[in-house]
View (cartoon, rainbow, N blue to C red):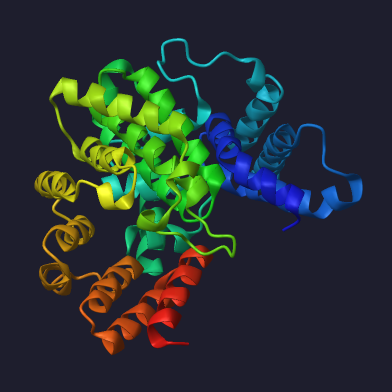
Length: 402
């Protein structure tokens, strides 16, 4: 994909789909229309040049494609009338004010809340919204959920069918409905951020933007503040996270002088605001873990005892294998690699590259070199991030004496 089109796709796909869903009231038609518009851009932009407003061009072209398709496929008078109705709205939509009764003013955030309807399972809400807003492929979403690709494809299809068959309306929830949607919305934003942190900086920026909008929308919801704090604190380390050769630099080895102190200050302030509320939750606890890391002037000064206590608390809220893996890392720092490895070995995370990477490091520290090399090889085979792969390959080579 040419750089111009690829850049617009990354930056504007989610907004274009959100606008088209609101315009058409049909998820599949909106997705197909936007994809058709980008296909047209690939064909025409190299010759005619990138238009002055690429996002506007994509949205307008997608609308026209959708209207043309409805007319072309219309076999009944009602279908033709629907196409004419959409045509009458064409050009007017951008001038219309958002629903004045709605507390949500952002198209992408509106679509997240729409997809996060209580009638859908939370995982289906998250998967569908990642597909629509992030423009993520099914394999990318499956990797984020640690499930096989066919399973994720079926989940997305079922979510769309549920919306269609149950006639779930494409409308923004009212104030009274917002609390019921928060869990799914936060999960969506966090997974968008995580996918971005694996290699797409634009998705991280979009997740932080959505987090700020949520904080404005529901300023008294501590988990929203916790998620925003978590993203800011993690994102503050981006400048130190990659070596000149592109390899990932782990937190203990990062040059802390490169960390973004403004983001750290904002994130720590949000953590303190959460603590004052006294209503802890998973995002707040993860933010507190990262606040402890950001407090330490050097890796050696990290208060791992406090981090372990926070993971003990997080385990009570979210008793998942991934949380247990992260807790084991803290145990390794407090009690040593032996007790940590015992915790890691019982986890059912064989398809997760970080599991093998943590295991490799613990085996290395225990002097079990051959096993550590095999664990690094397993992690390398599973990771999709070039930077992470380069880091793991470097660690394996150093251990194997290559």
